[in-house]
Image (cartoon, rainbow, N blue to C red; front, side, top):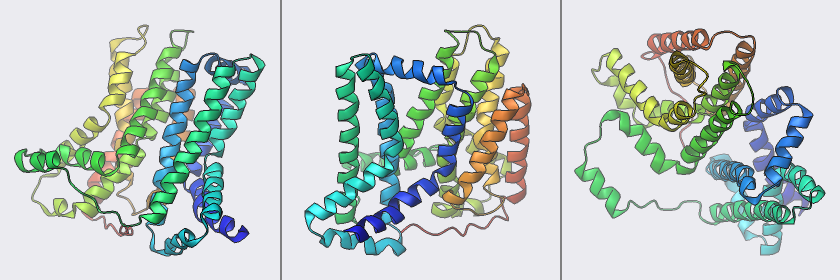
Amino acid sequence: MKIIFSILQRVLVREFYRANAGLFFLVIGIGAGFMRSYEHIALAEFFSASPTLMLVPILVWAIYTFNVMKFNRDILKRKENEFIFHITLLPPSQKWIGLIITLFYQLLPAILYGMFLMAFAIKNDFMDTLLMIFASLLLLVFIGSFALSHALHNPNQEKKTGAFAKFLNVSVTKPYPLFFPEWIARREPLMLFGTKIFSSLILLGVTQLYKTDVYDLRLLGLGIVIAFSAQVVLVWELHRFDNFHFPLNRNLPTPFAQRLFYFLCTLIILIIPELGMMIKNFPIEFKSLDIILSVLFALSIPVFFYGVLYIKDRDQEKFMPFVFFFSIIWILLVLFKIPLWLIGSANLVIGLTCLKKFYYSFEYISKAES
């Protein structure tokens, strides 16, 4: 039994935290560096005061759980991890204990914050909120365990195309900028919508803070860095789509300016929810020009990462430390009152220069999917 736990923890738990170390350090750095202790307490009391308000952290925990489920599914697809499927031969009680403990450790950050909220719910005698937190965390652990069990018992599921999707494929001719958004929506809907929800909530929360106190544009700049750095998972998938799933595109006689236009159209389509959230809730005390400059800064972040991806072939795990490093650099620049338009312009110049210089000489050698 101990051997089973050890295998699951090494292959799933340890690798999960190693792969997402950059994101965890970014969240810890923001939470510990930019929020004081009494602000954390006030936020916890705010969430625990009402079951409706508790839906916000529960939604974040659900997105986190979906990310864990996706990670586990991807890990099981690797050839070197095929031995894990032998766990299905164990007695059901041992198998389920191992899976539940694995998900418990993977969801530990959410569980610890849930216990923090539960302490304030108990302190203020909010028993309905207390039960809501406990039930939601327990449900997420079981959902993740069932998803992992299903992936172990069904390693090679057949993917079927529905009749309506077949009709659209035959009847509608899609422009190139819609190729990737439709592909990622079908292939990784949880990752796509989870990223959109997370980024939109960050921007919504940041813009709502302007209604409670007086802040300068740096607060919005910090929110933009977090929200649009989170888009790197989509940028990486777009890069892989262009170079692995659709490599023919680079051999077509398409001018580079037209390729760049298609890329920007695709990118704008992907980040429409975030741009809409930011523009709709933009603080009224700033000028219209500030909206344009903020949008420029937001757009520059995914452009920068897409260009950097062409410098050298890296898988997603190796690229995440770069995302963490540059996110911290941007946060520091924003805090030191460097204008957003200047940071955004530098990002665009670097990203587009890398894209222009390395696009045709870049060789994609990352491992194929199992």
